[in-house]
Image 1 (cartoon, helix red, strand yellow):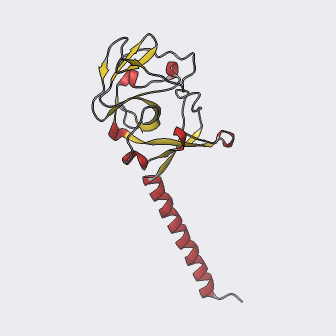
Image 2 (cartoon, helix red, strand yellow):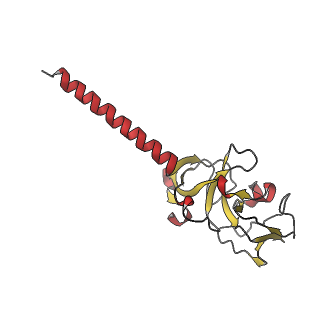
Image 3 (cartoon, one colour):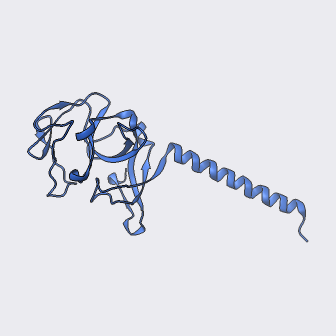
Length: 184
């Protein structure tokens, strides 16, 4: 025979565990990480369309953004869409696009993450041969698949405050699981 108090205690324990688990999940989601789905091919081959990634949100508050990192940020025009791009230019630097390449402070930027066939075309904001000084607390970001990427070349630099985190991990599809940004 099972006592009613034993059943009540078991139900109370289950509810308590559920509430604790939900609270921990919400705190982790808000403060530490966020699940996102890649949409489109602007970061190909580094990220593929429909891959599921985790954005790590904590270190961005303590560790400055570095060139070459893949970050997640709010779209600078719509403010309602999250985008994923690579950091190319840092605050205070002078950036220029010329003859299909990016130049930072007068030196050609080495971009080993790009396919050899990738050419960086100047566009609306970053016009061919025109130098642009990046303001403090702003960054220039671009997709790795430059011909398929709408990025800072079109809408300008992004503000530091719009960055929500760094790309940390691809977790789906399972055959593509891997750390991103060197596992930072």
